[in-house]
Image (cartoon, rainbow, N blue to C red):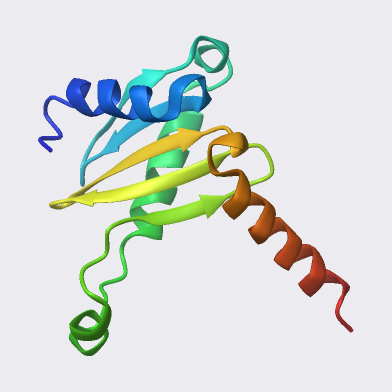
Length: 125
């Protein structure tokens, strides 16, 4: 995917996720842009919040996988982040990252699994 023209990815992920698609954010080393934001989110996220999100995404994907590990498991395809009201899927694209933010229903089994595990861990002595 070319990060200079993410519209095709927005169309694809829109077909895949349907109305659960919240946002597509393209983060390059020195810039970022919202390629898509669902109507109900456009007013919610200000420019500063998007900049903070882009910085967070860059940090979340900054670590390189050691060659010894990638030789066994392969290259990184995506990083999944589960939050209370959203699921983020980060895709590395060259030196950029593309975030597809989804409603939790789009990844309901994974979302429920992650939150169940977290609740269990929180309750452990």
